[in-house]
Image: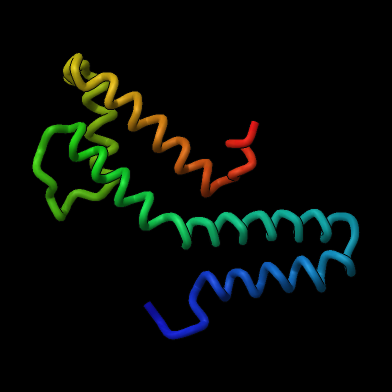
Length: 122
């Protein structure tokens, strides 16, 4: 972690500049690309705010689901691949199926919280 401003504060400052100063001064293609940039910055800000806690929650669910001791070298992506492989090759035990479905639902929900929380309101 660096001193202030934090990465989230920098992203917010650029977002505010584009929203307040740029959007009203541009039209057409540039206005469209400015809206795209605003959406990207909002996604990055949510990732900065939520990402670490979401990753920890996903990792904890995966370790419990895969019925093994946590290994510091395994990333969440590694554990997701392990789960996907177990589902694909049929080695996931029947009593793990419901937990796998719940993990996948929770993970999709967390991803939508970052990508676009409006999708969760529909």
